Image 1 (cartoon, one colour):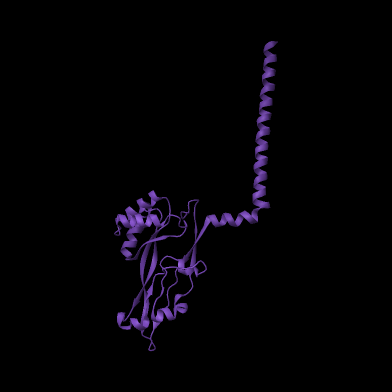
Image 2 (cartoon, rainbow, N blue to C red):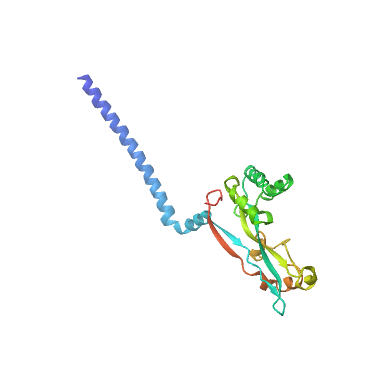
Length: 228
């Protein structure tokens, strides 16, 4: 009967197509499995650390600078706690939006915003760019409340150097200041945002003892370097 022959032919054609599709899928899974085996087992020691470096971002922490006392135990120089706000480098449009929102809390001119955005060009994506130092707790708290509207913006504890006798003992105690330049082989501390070094007096002469050792924090980040 012609109808039955056509059905048998159709069934055989369907079976061949199903077999062909199955073979293609099996081959694709075999290639995928082979590649996974190569990456995870044969080359795992090579790619494992690289993947971990992309997932974990490590940032340095400025140490608390040592205090200075006179021979009678009177405090001459110490650290006053305040807050610092910074922003992670990213696309310029995102940075501008965040900085303009931030300008509702702390004064930021258009020129300052453009300067910060320009400074982010070519900067490492996991190294925050300082925006403003010496913020009060109330200002830092307001920034925290708007965190969802401020992608890339972070607040951190900042230590401002204070002197008990001001200029009266300044010629002996000295003062600290920002780092104008550093070499590639310098102490990583010098490259941290907010780092200060002694410029004159005891602050300069005892720099190695007063500076301390930088700490570090680790963050889990996504493919764009944003903290998870």
